[in-house]
Image (cartoon, rainbow, N blue to C red; front, side, top):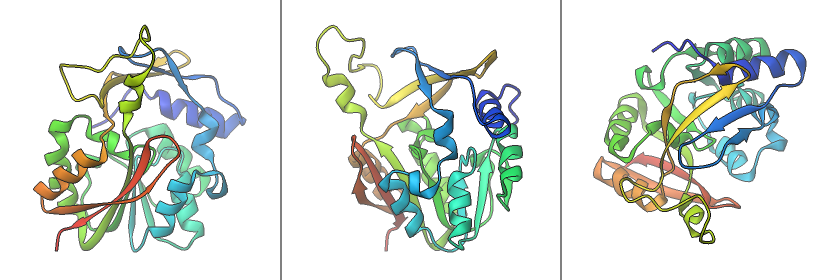
Length: 237
């Protein structure tokens, strides 16, 4: 799948070329407008939160860095001597990664990837690309096809139930028509508007149950500072 509007890539390219970027705006029908700090996409290993550092330290063998963005995780792995392939659907992000020195970059939809990988790395709420709970079976089917026999998936998520515990009168209400971690987003950079897309924040128990149902085992490796957590997924023995 090719994308014609590339707000994320436009922001990444601007920051790389000029050392600064305009506001990368995030819209959702359920919440107020938000912003992604573009500089965060260029962070070094030392600047990464502990969960990301832990995931990178546990990455082994041939790594697939899913949704690699500006390539911060791929570059950190290269510096650690780990072989990594960055996959990204954003053409401008792919071009920037290559200019930054990421050695293996593939411009492709993750769902179209083939090959065999010892570690599939999905950070910055990487499970979000699954979109909805109903897509979890497709996710496990796909990773089963591209994961080496003794391979692992390192993925983080956030249990967003805390959002719905706010004071009465706030905008956020627990949805009754869908799983509470299923959201819709749209990203805009300057005048470049992306398409609406689904994004999933899945709690650990739901993810672990789905993993077991599809022949995998999910291990909770660590918790972050704000309801986020890192999971290691392996084939069940």
